[in-house]
Image 1 (tube, rainbow, N blue to C red):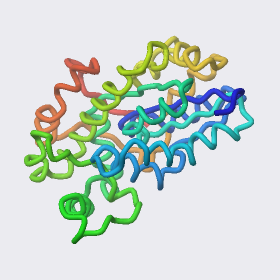
Image 2 (cartoon, helix red, strand yellow; image 1 turned 120 degrees about the horizontal axis):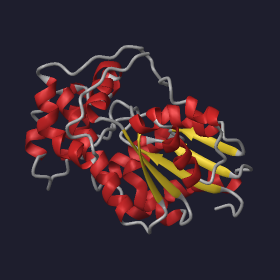
Image 3 (cartoon, one colour; image 1 turned 90 degrees about the vertical axis):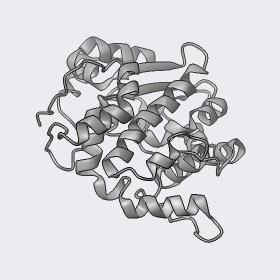
Length: 278
C-alpha cells in the first residue's frame, strides 16, 4: 500500500446509494474514487468466497493484484471503491490493507428489494441464472462454472444454512429479500471483528435528510467537507428507470418474513415505507 494514499471501501447490499456516494466523495478533491472497481473479477470472487469455493489465500491474491495494486500506484491522497461486491471480502481486504477504512452504507430493505426486482430483474436472481449457478455448486463435475456475467454470480445459501432448502423454492423477489438480509449480516459480522475506528455506519435516508450525517462521514474518511457535498444527496443517481412504488400485497409479507429481523437490527423497524420522488 502506498504510504501517501489512504484507502477506504463503501460496502452495502447495492441499490443503496453507492453511486450517489461515489459522486459526492469524488467532489472532495485529491481522491481517486471508483464504483464497483474490477466488478467482472470481484463479483465472481466474492460469491465463490462466500460459498467456500475459494479460500482466503486465493481471495487475498486476487485483491492484491487488483485493489491493493491500484492503491499502491495511485497518485491521489485517497483511493476509494464503493461496491456491494466487496461486502463478501471484508476480512481479506482488512488484512491486506491494514490501514483501510470501511463504511457500511444501508438503505431500507424494502426499497432495495423493490429496486432490484423492478429495475435489475434481468441480472439479479432470475430463475434461469440462479438455477445454473445452483447446479454448478451442487455438482461442478457435471455443470461447469458460468461465465463472469453479473446475472450468474449472486450468493446462494450454503449447504449448512438451515434455510437452504426453502431458498430453492423461493421466487425471484424472495431471493432478493434474502440477499439484502444476508449481505448485511455478513457486513455487520465482518466489521465487528475489526478494531474500533476502522468502520462507520451510515443510513442513506440520514445522509439525504441531514447534512450533519454527511459531514460526519467525510470526517471519518479524513476528507474536506463543504456545504455543496451535502446537496449531492438530494437527488438519486444511477437510475436507469426513474420510477418507484411501494411493495405489493404479496411482496410485503414475503419481505417481512425473510428480512424482518435485519430491518429491526438496522433500525428500520416501525418505519413507514416511502416512495422516492425523482
